[in-house]
Image 1 (cartoon, one colour):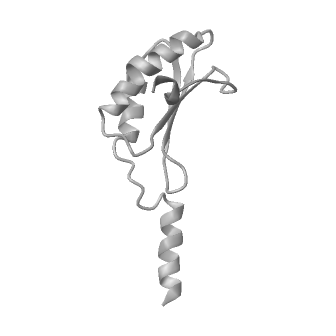
Image 2: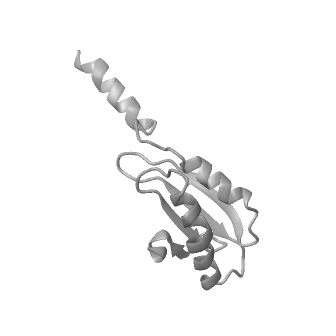
Length: 109
């Protein structure tokens, strides 16, 4: 009896289980579809019961930190907050080589 229950629990963990993704993928898609000249890529990482869902935005080369933070705080975060985000959704902006965090949703709160 324990084996089938354990299999279900382990299977749920591997797929994100019952973690509520809600509007997360749609929020990332909307940010991508804006076609901002600042944005190179937008990727959504599914959340689970250990880690919250994340949207990672990679910026075009040459985008200043100030412009990145303005985009995050005036465009990305307001859209995410009004679009039924998953609990704990984070948004990070990275430089064009994805090696330096330029801005985080924490910069806007």
